[in-house]
Amino acid sequence: MSPAPGGGNLEEVRGGGISHRGPSSIGYTPAAAVGFEIVPEAVRSQLRAMGIIGVSQLCASCEELGVRRRPDGTHYQSGEAWWGDATRAVLMTLSREMVQRGGRQFSPGGAWRVSGMVHHLGDVGGPEKSTWQYDPAASTGKSDSPPVKTNDPLDLLPPDVAAPVRGGSSDVWLETSSSSATEYLTAIRVLANKVLQLEANRTARSKAALLRAAWTLTTLEAPITKSVPFAFTIDGQTLASGARNVLGGTPPGVPRLPGG
Image (tube, rainbow, N blue to C red; front, side, top):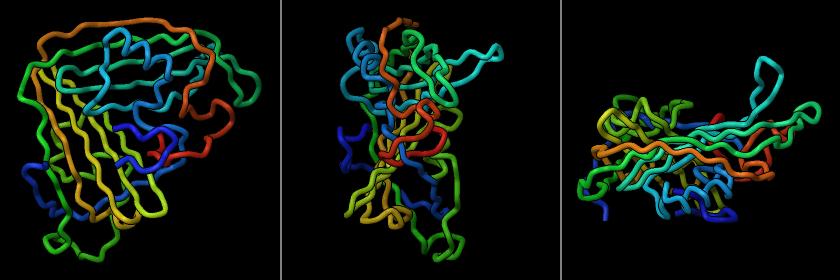
């Protein structure tokens, strides 16, 4: 789920469960964009125009488009992204050449090169929805014990919920306002013959209260019917939102997980 343009809060559930494990917390740092919005707008538009992705996703995100140095001293910007709905799962890599202008100052030196695979999915009747909530009374630890610190987004979820998508790609981000805080988590795992997708969110009156707030989850497990590769190049001279160490720092914005 992507944040609303310009920030602000992004805000029939069936089934449910209780987690007996103590809550986990994660550290966040500011970022200018989160989720699939990190993918440059020109690339997103081309993906939609080519029918590679649709309008509304179940899960989607993108790594930070960091600048990297090759052994020969040249630089490039790259990252991996994913997008999925009930009909397809898309894994892609974005990259382009960068020119060093001095220190950590860089500018684009070439067009975006985008390549990946579209996995078409069989019909399984749509995704399932459920809610999960941590119950301190059922925990084997003390109810007032501090939360476990983690850098893995999936550690925020009950283990049996996270297990199917471990080994794939996951991301989490936080959006806050003066009256609420919302965490969004997305994950995808592509196996040889099927795809597992997960989207989760939880909202509370404050960041601290999120630790015991209920997660609302949407999950999908679907067979792969065929896989089709794609690749294209698109010109553009605007630096990608969310790229770090490109202009010497991280711009203020929406907190997200360090390292994408």
